[in-house]
Amino acid sequence: MISSHGPDEYRMRESLLNAAGEFETPLYVYDMHAIYSNLQNIRSAFSPGTQIHYACKALDNGHVLRQLREWGCGIDAVSQEELMIALRCGFEPEDINFTPSGAPLSEYLWALEKRINVHVDNLQILELLGQQKCGLQVSLRFNPQVRSGGHVHLQVGADDSKFGLHAEEMDNVSKLVKKYHIDVRRIHVHVGSDIKTEEDFLLCWEKAFALAEEYSETVQIVDLGGGFGVQYFPDDPVLDIDRLGAEVNKLVEQHLQKTGKRVVLMLEPGKSIVGNAGYLLVEITAIKKLKNSHIVYVNSGFNHMLRPMYYGAHHRFENLSNPNAVKSTYKLVGYLCETDTFSESVELPEVRRGDILCMYNAGAYAMAMASNYNSRRRPAEVALMDGQVKLIRR
Image 1 (cartoon, rainbow, N blue to C red):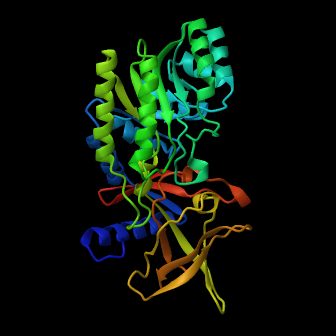
Image 2: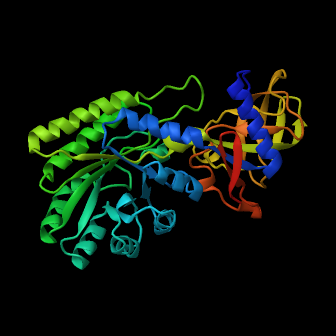
Image 3: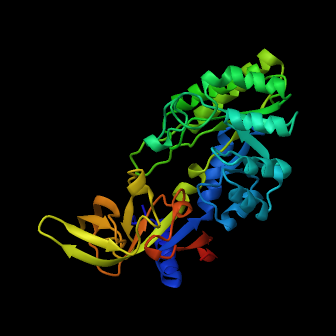
């Protein structure tokens, strides 16, 4: 934690406080060293040649995207607007995946014209594309029927989810593939997000390889979507990513033995790359002392950080301005004309008006989901590298 007395923690606290002073709050800070370290940890767990396409819906800041491109990442995008951002940031079309759900046909056609790989998860879209582009190359996204994820909204691989081609549609999928001579180059599955158990991933991935075997004549890549769970608190379970890498390598070898073909693995991490590298800095604007509780107001709300209100997410907070004071329990709320509670009960060193609080794990699905509700401006964003901060979006 930043409040510990180690030299690294002290320097980080000072860097964050300096950033808050220079650029004002609320402010998002991204630790670029942490992003690189997270990326390398994933790479080292999987076999050489595994392709990593960063899920840019987690954080679409151009500076971060360009840095990830330099570090050898591709991009997974879910809208035409994200595709345009990726292209502007210098990603080559062949390094971009388009993984929409419910998008208009025009977006699929636009992506195909740009030679971007397209994941299709809808029968009607598959047939419409086949009618317009007989013999086209696509990736098929299947629903693995595995219910897993850190929140019900994140369980996109469940059988009642809107995502993916479902098991009961498989016969019709095969008919359309044959009818329109569709070249199925990739099999794609996505089990869910913020998953902390290896078994759910492995069950989903086994199904992906079973489908790859059915389309083995054309399939070259197996795209294993799904969000690796991250720690929000020190005692949260840690996903054994090395075990996942070892187990999926076995699936690759088994596929080779059965089909005579070695497929390329592809991953789509988002939160596990940027989540713990982000900090949201806010300032205490007022304190209300009631008989049974002390309510702390800060200059932010769900317009900047929706996760606690939408997902029920619990984030750690730290009082950067008064880290060594005696701790008390507070209710932490925002400044919107709305119920925008960050935490019903958070333990912090004594707080004062004007203190700077730091919210941890604010790199993913935070600024990317921000709005201008109440006509409030979005926070600025800065990148932290080697103790220096750089403004990367205001």
